[in-house]
Amino acid sequence: MSRYTIHMDVSGRVSRSTERHEFATVGGFSVETGKTDSSRENLPKDLPKWEIATISDVKKMSKYICENAIYVTAVCLDKNTEKWSLFWEDAEAYHQKLASASKMRTGYVKAAATNVRRDSL
Image 1 (cartoon, helix red, strand yellow):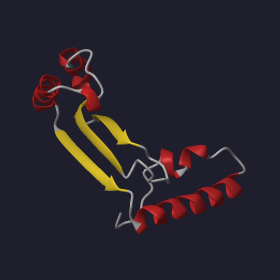
Image 2 (cartoon, rainbow, N blue to C red; image 1 turned 135 degrees about the vertical axis):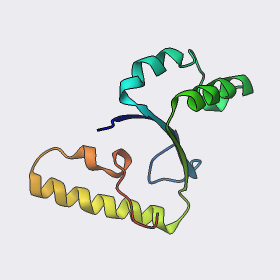
Image 3 (cartoon, helix red, strand yellow; image 1 turned 180 degrees about the vertical axis):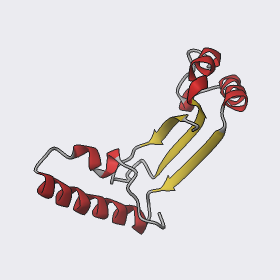
């Protein structure tokens, strides 16, 4: 059986509010778990956050991904939509039901910490 390790980064704020944060972008790639240690050795060191990255930084990371990743994805969510609001409403309702039924801490299932989504989001 194959196993994979996924590396992801989020840009933007995953929050109900859209003020000054109209988008949330997630980028990621996966490597075979058995090759994680060797791929880490090749990972460029001291890369800055994307907002201040130079073309040289992006080229280094692109080269690393091309040489090590088996899958790459990027998703940009437009938070200024009715579906974004519905996502938060659904997530809050689900969280309340789960918290009530389980009588346990359930903060891990709040919308900002999960990938719960509507089919058409």
